[in-house]
Image (spheres, one colour):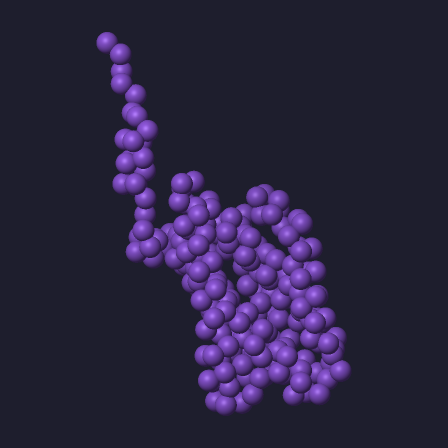
Length: 217
């Protein structure tokens, strides 16, 4: 006798049974940790967008804020030209760690910036971090998910980043008097970026040892 092949309807039902929902994504550490990292960096980025123009205005510095964002965009585009191929060879973790370090450096530079060159250096570090972090985090969660759920996984992870951007301005604005001004805000941004790096290096894989090794490539 012949063996019956599954029809399209039964295959669809099998996929539906295997499909994961939001709660299951939250419980999956392999996806949750990259999302938390993006949430924290989203807070940093939202703070940068909200308060950098006000900071430059307060300093009375003759510096076009548009130049800052242009340098960020150019640097971000430039690093993406080679980082994808390099991450395939040396591992996603090493480059994600480097991106988080770039965010820490960018925020620290902003806490000390007094001249246009200081802001340009901060923009270069910011652009390098953004150009590496977002595409490689999406590549990482793609590696950790099934082909038929990647759209939902990408939406879940980038949702963390978007939520961070949305909360960054209002929450840091509320803390501005406590932090002693815009430099204090950027210093707190550096702390959040450092926390994201620590989380990634200690929680990014199945245990602390594997996480540390993965984060260092």
